[in-house]
Image (tube, rainbow, N blue to C red):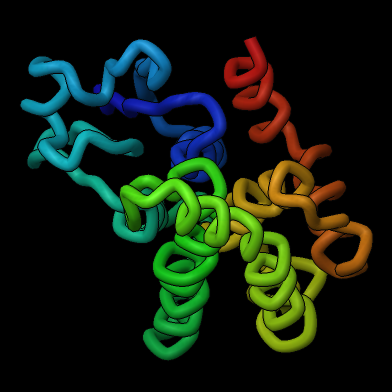
Length: 205
């Protein structure tokens, strides 16, 4: 059975939703970041990066959200979670990698500014910039990347739980999601999906 390691408020939510969407048999293991579970020896044996998500499969361990999402889509093709056309699949990967490489770090400068500087004043400057940076990222998503009603257009895909996850961070980052009508509508519709309700019931405990 698959084993997914996750923590509250992290991007692991996207992989958790995708596993539920796929109808996969899996065990979800919660880490407590406040207690430093991600740095304990047992977990570092699973993922030396000390981060989530990590997914144990029969063939080995996967980390990084875009990789895990792509693996889920390709392992459970009957769930139709990704385009089968190579170009369209690359477009989906480009979107997910934008979330991973640009949007997630833009958010992380608020709760984890210490990753980039030991200087307290510099950390505060980085935190102050987060609302603008996240607004800029979501302006691009709203105007150019989100095709609607789902990220890739008419078909739901692995891009959607990832966008839902990061959209959920906007309020804490000082950004009103209502500024982005398409993103806001997407977020609300995602919240009505059975897989999302099932997973959120676990994450909100």
